[in-house]
Amino acid sequence: MSNVQYEYVDESSIDENYKCLICNEPFQQPVTTS
Image (cartoon, rainbow, N blue to C red; front, side, top):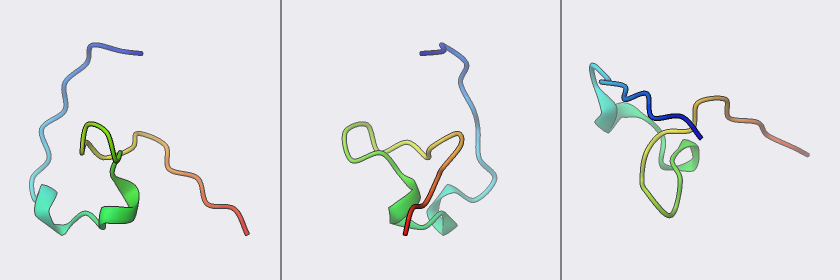
């Protein structure tokens, strides 16, 4: 894990599917599988 903090311009526009369920922060490299 990294201690780098990000500041998003419009974090509310990020889809909930791309946020961690534990910390509610957006994933850095989201991956989808089918």
